[in-house]
Length: 103
Image 1 (tube, rainbow, N blue to C red):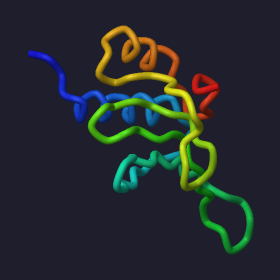
Image 2: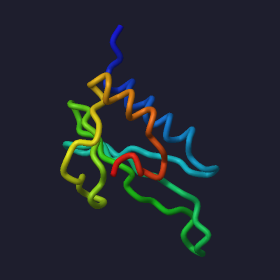
Image 3: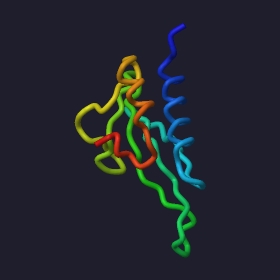
C-alpha cells in the first residue's frame, strides 16, 4: 500500500525530532497554502524560555518542501517532494534539525 502524504510528513517530522538535540521540539502550523514547520529550542535568555524559528514549509496537497525565506514565506525553489519516491528517500537520509539539507 502506498504511503499517504500525511504519513510521509509525519515520518519526516519524526526523523527531525530523533536527530535533534535534547530539548528541541518541532511544531506544525497549518495555513491556507503551506504547513509551517517550526523548530523550538530551549533558551538561556532570561524571560525567553524557548526560541522559535521556521525550519521549512510544506505545500498542502502537493507535499513539496521549501526552505524558509522568512517567518511567513517559503523561499523559491522546491527542495524535496514528499510524493516522489526518490526525493522522499533523499529527504529522510539528509534531514537534520539545523536545516543544511535545505540549502
